[in-house]
Length: 395
Ligand code: MLT
Image (tube, rainbow, N blue to C red):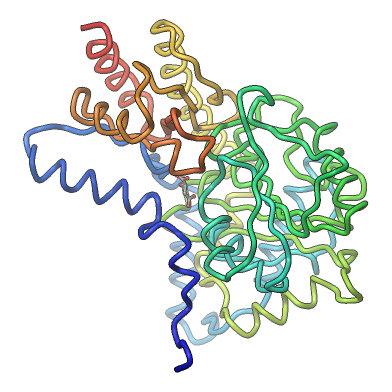
């Protein structure tokens, strides 16, 4: 009898990493309702939306109540006002894009999971390990072959390709989730040159670019040749606190052609078929992020999250625990103390300090023995959490 179910689901963990964390936390809460837990697990923002964004949202919502200003289905790639604002943001890094190359989306996660629709089931997907599990699970679900490139302490969690490496599709994230490691321009050039030489395509996740505080590249398009080999995905979730609003943007340059097919045209065809865009009020709110007032407010929030990361980093320094990240990233990637494995440390941290984090092994085999703490919980929580960690580990 023909199989009707996609059995590739058998090749991925039964639950999505953050659902599994939430399930275990719910069980712990049920058993210990008196404990106040500090959430430093999923990278969900806690600072509220800023005034310019809310004013734009309210204005757009009001427009929807009048026949003359009502908006139904929007343009397939997003409204021009937002695509032009995105172009302006890129111009700030010295990257010049065509408006046609920008697609407005409901966030990075869906596009990163859906972009493989453009590629055949036979193509080989390369992922750094550890990695954001969406890249892995969405390709395994589709039955693709996934290979891994070890991201370890030895390569500062920023692996580079060598000549022997072969793959068709590569996911890179910089600054990286979960390790916070970020590629320099020279390192990204190595990836771009490798992709061009191998006819590979890079899916570049720039969701954390807003955390960069120095001269590291914000976009892969800062590297010459990237428009011929890379698609870039970004989101306002972390830039502007949009995790509950859902808006992002993906750049598929016109120059990106493989086997005679223009990937931009394929993505447009795919999106027109399977997506109806992002709500008009949300796109207006997103436009407000890119105004000088909007950006200034977002920078204040990012600075506050980075101060929270510094509180965690200082405590780990004091406790003599190895870590990286937290400088150009909201994530601290730490070694599990006391020789615990990632899930053992997750349980012990919850039990002894009431802190929720994310086990490194959930991001891949090389994450075993490591743990991710998110600074999105804010300064006050970071301080309280580190006091609890000190009290536990020094007891
Ligand atoms: C994370 O915690 O890794 C992220 O918040 C997940 C996401 O952005 O989907």
